[in-house]
Image (cartoon, rainbow, N blue to C red; front, top):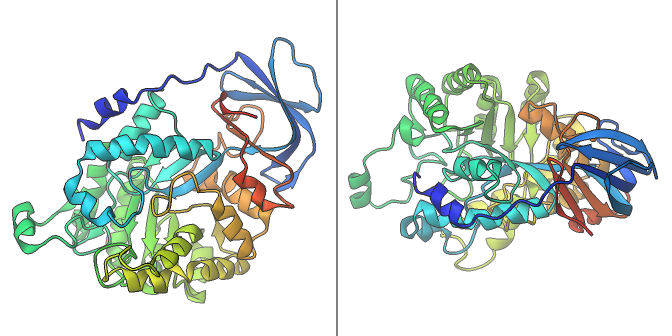
Amino acid sequence: MRYCLPALVLMMTALPAAAATTALQCGDVFDARSGKLVGARTIVVRDGKVAEVLPSGSSVADARAIDLSGHTCTPGWTDLHVHMASQSSPQSYSEGFRLDDVDFAFRSVDYAKKTLMAGFTSVRDLGGEVAPHLRDAINQGLVDGPRIWAAGKSIATTGGHADPTNGVNSVLAHLIGPPGPTEGVINSIDDARQAVRQRYKEGSDVIKITATGGVLSYAKSGDAPQFTVEEVKAIVDTAKDYGYRVAAHAHGTEGMKRAVLGGVTSIEHGTYMTDEVMSLMKQKGTWYIPTIYAGRFVAEKAKMDGYFPEVVRPKAARIGALIQQTAEKAYKSGVKIAFGTDMGVGPHGDNAREFLYMVEAGIPAAVALQAATIRAAEVLGVDDQGVIEAGKRADIVAVPGNPLQDIGAVLKVDFVMKDGTVYRQP
């Protein structure tokens, strides 16, 4: 990974210059706290922050004015589950053997820009060694992209969803040797602690565990539990020492239950979530990140001969089709829901389709928008974004029309501002 940053430097792009003061004349504004539209407003941005929210048409001295009449302004959106270094294709399984980290780093530059231009000013990257380096390059102004909370290498058990040697033949496996906590593979409480500390050493912002089997891993089971409650608790407790929160990939019921009992912050996917698990999540305050987009994408691709290896194909067909139904049940049950797509499974920049799928699942459009704004900020544990209020980050997205009446408007992003800098405008 020491070569990734120079590779990104070669892709260096100049950040647009931010005006000292900008006045956004918004036709309507989405208040993420109430989930309502509050009418036309003038949003004053100064030094990367929202300085004031004034009545519509207010004159602001020495400000650059941007006309967003006919548009609804919302806080910048956050996707809580992405993989910025990869994108699914029939070649995905062989590329891990043919390509270097530098190749994936170059690709991630394009993926990051597409994500930002789609209205996502923040993301949580849940698994990928390129992500911490991409995060740093974006923060240094070398690359255009969203703010990144990076997990780095996901933590798995031997043979689990994030074991990097799954599908490797015996000769190569012998040469590589069995992966351990340094490589994110654990088999004990002590291993669990070491794996978290290694992620800290590598500069991660959040911890990701694969609490059950996965759809796209080269393994038979997509839902078997893969940690003990004690191992999960060791990960969560150690993560707290470093101020980290823990996200748990989980499809199967038992693995999900163990993850919730172990104290994780969020359950990702949650395919076989039962009433018992939902009740536990409500008791513990555990968040649910549905990733409906990924489920629909893999279920569709499973119909195509040759897209997935045969060991993966039945899992994709069976599990992928269920996630949207689970999201509907979880919402009706009162489980806390935030926004995530598992993008990288599908094409980056297509993240906003998750809004449409959430609405199809019976989640109101206002709740879906809250899931990607104020609720996402709560999952991340930050209070400086997710709302348009004085003193908060000037992360603002504008779409034509009224997204609460026509959620399809989220696919027509016309304006993107991150930290007061305009990256896209009509």
